[in-house]
Image (cartoon, rainbow, N blue to C red; front, side, top):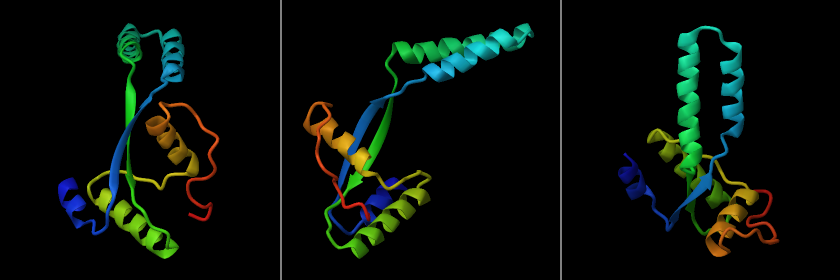
Length: 129
């Protein structure tokens, strides 16, 4: 379905993926609290297994992969039309999508262009988009 969706896009676009570290320390803390409050040994065992899985993720530097679809356009009406088209197409493929904020785009660009170092650039897009 995703390949078919890509084939229907009638404008030039760039697909970029970005990995971000996932912090699950608050999840681990919640599991530990639950473990300490439970008396049933079967439930304690299940929670203990979840804690071990979470610790495995932490040891292996688990990341969340985000995908960005970028396109070049100045006309606000065309931008909104393309966004609706992209978001509807991705939804039909069973994927959730959101329009990025300026901070999202700045973080992504910092990651690719500056080796993850934050810059003091101005907004990537005007605020009304």
